[in-house]
Length: 211
Image 1 (cartoon, rainbow, N blue to C red):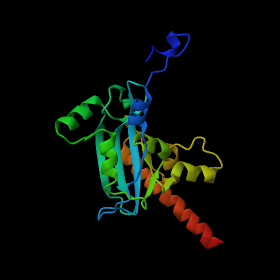
Image 2 (image 1 turned 180 degrees about the horizontal axis):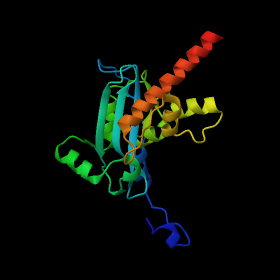
Image 3 (image 1 turned 90 degrees about the horizontal axis):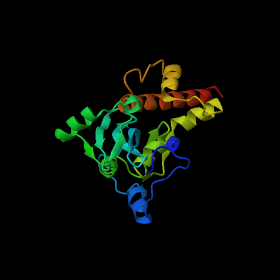
């Protein structure tokens, strides 16, 4: 990759072969297998850092059961590519946290293993819920048929998707202040996303009842 654009007249993108792109960005659909751990609906939230290539890279994964709010996964993900930085200001993840989790073998190694861990709880019939969930699915190179994005749900309610940050919506809808520390907390965000969807479901039911 060339130096930053501001130092050059023309940007020099990283050169990759088709095989490299395929290996790195091959998306996979949810396997059809179902186990005793498979859930009806789950909420996902991921934190991403920036790889040396400039790509977003998964560094933390949280998955909770929508109905029980039980935490299924809350793990740091050790990247399998060189990293530029962890976006700590936004992700809340530091290298100290990553190294401690790695040394104690408490992290997940790479996004592929993280995705496999998710599939323990998710089948094609499972509803996957997230706020701006496209970025989460992209970080996992994951195709799933049943998705609810609270950003879209709220966008339909507002008539626009401008300014519909999870932080703002949690305060307006739930009376809850989130993301007030150093960076995000994916468990806090996943819980807020769950409660935000539930808020919308209740309002829809109330509207149908009144009608």
